[in-house]
Image (cartoon, rainbow, N blue to C red; front, top):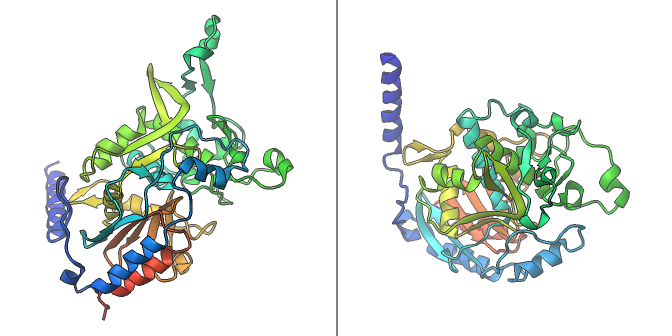
Length: 404
């Protein structure tokens, strides 16, 4: 036992020593430095910032209208979670942990859309690191009790049997094959209806008959980006933790990295379950149907810095390095995607101007947290036209000191 304790103490000392000289912002202060301090071309950084500003998305600032324009042709497309108007283009650039540029209003708390999916994968990663999930290849259904849905008072009848309603989202023959890994990689082809949203109604095929009658793909064989299935993962994670996922994220990630108290992770108005006699809202994994993360650019930057540093924050391992490695490892099914929402630049298909090792947490808007470990760089870019992100990166990366 003494030997084990000695080894652990030695590792802790080594880890703390390894962090010396590596800057992490405190909860109350995030140091700014000029690009010139790092021999970075200030004019080119300004050019990148101006590019982001002048290439703001054409999507309406009214996100209800934006939802209608983007997804209005989908059946069941009406939002059932909160939405809010967005601001203009905004962002921050972080180099070696320091803020070297910012624009717009980085303090504005706005929808992050599918960046929220990275929060879902993080709380699953925490459960895995803590042993609440034994193996990612385990079938999800084996972890879940019957799920009691909280029924609104207006729906109650005098029949006491009607006062309880249960759902079994992983109990079909197909869904029982689905593992945690399948859900994290969006290769599950989960089937069903959750919170009133059928899986087939999320970016459906034009062929109506295929929506409900097509043969299901074997889990792990086909990638399909689908918010209903992300919400199924969020529900499963809530049952594993047996408490609200925002609470898990706040205690285990956001507070330790010094995030503000202005962010909120919301769900749908009908996504309430009963766990151990308490009502809990199962949060959504994106803003497709409303809800998800409402967050400012500074807090997004802290999350990007955490993944840049492989889950370590000033000597404390928040997410295990093993989890970050798994999250950034592609599959042959989709070489540009790891765990949600780690978009990978494998083969430089996503961002031709960036290193192949770079990745990004991306949401509609576009909201992006660009993470570049080769250059010790994080960039939070909000409300840029989705086709212009590489142009921004090309200008930013050309400003960095040339490696010899």
